Image (cartoon, rainbow, N blue to C red; front, side):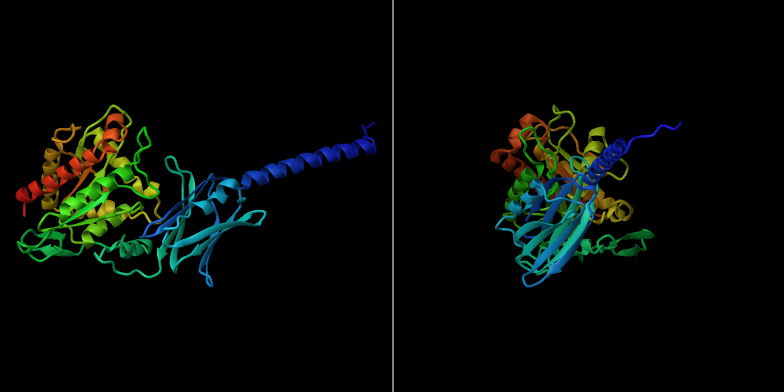
Length: 423
């Protein structure tokens, strides 16, 4: 005879099964919800960035509201936890775009982030996959709705607008046919320069905003150090007759690599100098280095490593459009021989001055495929002021005296270059 269970036993078995299914359902539901790892707000006069970092990809929708001006971001499959609540405290009073941020749980699986605005904005929202120390990120960039010209005619806001719309990627240098050489060459931006025309120098402090750059043992951030050195260099160059100087950024803001390049081209720069204080896997490595662009590979394994880490800045800082086609293909095809030659002369001139300030990592300039050096018509160099990963150099980089010495060496190197350059 088949074995049967009493009604009491059958009810008990059903109850156990139901409890197990309920437990599994709850576990599955909990696992489906995203966990917030960190929240950040980066204010600047250029734009403000809000970042919500989670353990999984987020789905969301944004809406602009009026009376009063607000931006609502509804995030699905997430709970309002303690970390997400902290976003309200991240807003600074000096933020030009955000008045306040509030978060509420709309329903069991949806959180609304409400951004109260100080002015009309154009939001740019996108997600980023994990890279290095960052997990999945939801990024909300708040740009001004109207781009107004500034006192020094800084084109950055306009370029960021073009970049956001995908226009910089397609913005190629104008080409003309050089009948004497029988090939296409980039059209010169300027007419034949007057002897009294100022030399336009663009200083590029690396990293910024969401991208801290290298971090030293004492938590010194590369982006802070290089901004200080760039500002000191800017002040020195402003005193030089016949030199006009600009910076790609003058605050803690993330600027994509090809926007930095395009800003220099828009300003019709004669020189582009990117300033860094990088790290290496071996903390004993020290010394200053100057890099010029190479189209044939790196001059050493260390140069290759540093170029790779610097070229990842867009992924770390976070961009919604890569721009790699503009940087990696077209520009390399258009690089002029004179531009490359002058880049080497500029780099050697700065390095020669640097050796009186700090130990050199290499006695001559190095070469590598740094994306930020790939302007087709501007001699460009990347100055590694020191290795922030080395304890001794981290300490020096934090001092005003050393920063001034580095800045002075860069300025004197520029002046030496102007006497040697090929025209």
